[in-house]
Amino acid sequence: MEFGILGPLSIRSGPSAIHLSGDRNRKLLAALILNVNRAVPIDRLIDVVWDEQPPATARQQVQNRLGQLRSMLALDDTGQRIIRHGTSYVLEAAEERVDAFRFRAICAEANSTSHGGEFERAIGLLRDALSLWRGPVIQDITSPTLNAEKSAWEEAKLRAVERLVTLEFARGHHSVMIPDLHAWARQYPYHEKLHCHLAEALHTGSRTAESLQVLARLRATLRDELGIDAGQEVHELESRLTGRQEEFTAPVDVPVNLQAVEALQRALTETTRALQLLQILTG
Image 1 (cartoon, one colour):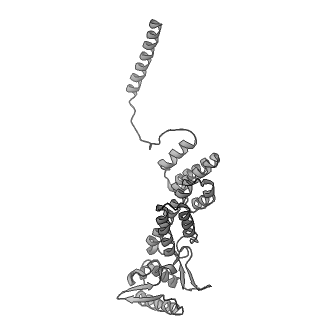
Image 2: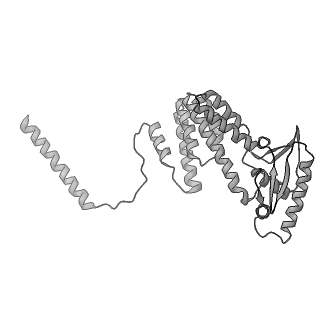
Image 3: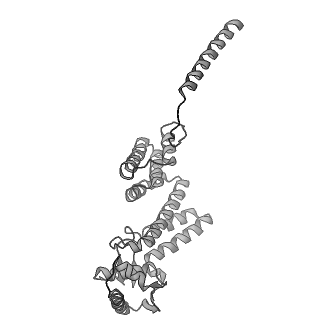
């Protein structure tokens, strides 16, 4: 039996997909898969199923549902099982049977390979790892209790994306990355670095106008939806693409001393007149 959490929850036995009915059953299994081979306290499983105010029978209900999941796993002969350790439960399974852990293992191999100088092989491995993703982590299951685990895997994906982009750009493969970067920018609309990578790839392919549009849309999205300005990297890239070598600094409210400004203007005027007179006297 194989489990998928990089996208909607997926359970397969050989070539056949297994449908697990019941939202609470799916939440319990997802919590155990996210923590495969690690003990999950029953109180946490209760929180996964009922985000707040669980019923008085919550503990018994969870135990009953875990029994049903045990029976489902027993139908498969690949060794997965749910066992109890005191007040905790563990899904025992080979990590290679969970897509997220296969993803992590392939990424580790890619990093080792790139450090050894085998960049093309590392690129291939990272693409294999990212191909395991079918969407956001367990996107069909809503449980605030699982958000931390879900975010951790999303961060791992972004690190793999960043590593792939770095390797591909270093090989001069900017145009190759444009379709992928478009897709990732849509998936992560607030991620400034991905948008900067997309803008850079477009610019390298002589599509500077499009690259500036990407950055303009990002700034508008951040402003309109989050109420924030884009960061320094976005401003510096825009300056470079438009040929303006200005340094980005955050706006600061500085009080203006009008008397000092007027005095400076008078001094500059007098200095100019003095230079003109010196030029006349010296020919």
